Amino acid sequence: MASRQVSRPHKRSEFELVFITRQAEKGWTDCLAVARNATVDAWDRLTTAPTVEDERLYRLRAELATGTYDGATFERYQYKITNSGRMWYFVQHAPAAKIAGRVLLERCEPGHPKQTDRPRKH
Image 1 (cartoon, helix red, strand yellow):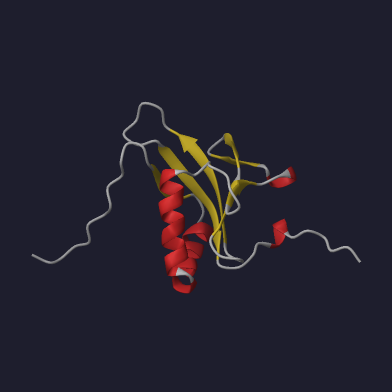
Image 2 (tube, rainbow, N blue to C red; image 1 turned 30 degrees about the horizontal axis):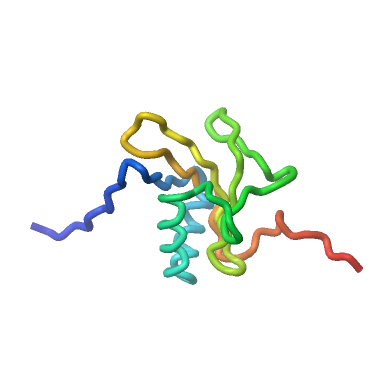
């Protein structure tokens, strides 16, 4: 028998991560290439506590505060993978399911997204 990788099962209290854009899927691979340990830490955090805010994880504001997926509007969160790398995502709760819900990865970037840059004061 050929060997096959065993996928990590989820606890009922955990969220599963899913890509909702091609950019997020490609960006995830890029993040793994440049910051593997930090990306694995992001996986751990997003599967267990994707809405518990701190200095690395928080909701975006203003025009970036919400987004839509599959006809539904969600609050948009950002997780800082590294000082520059970011993940943007929505959280879809799944009451009475085999998992807590899904983290809908909209964007994964090893670099800082320009949309969140603040204008510099001169």
